[in-house]
Length: 72
Image (cartoon, rainbow, N blue to C red; front, side):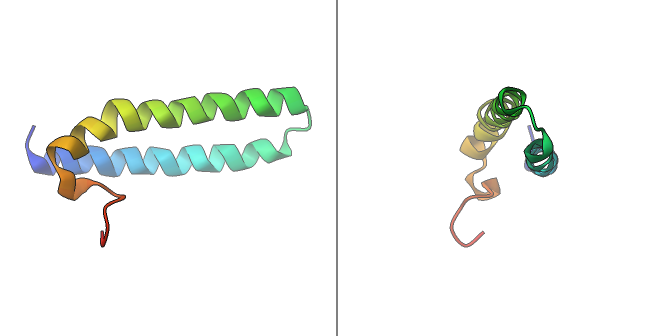
């Protein structure tokens, strides 16, 4: 994969991450505590999967695309 494509995938993944964060915030309005916890857990698992399966392999290949890098 060429770096421009990798960068687009990272950008798209970050956009999905922002949407998942918005979903997590919405779960605060769920009054059923068990359901709220289940929803948060599933959203967290989706976030983790996105990072480990999509973003991590790319930033290993292109470390300059790591959104968590110092000075980035």
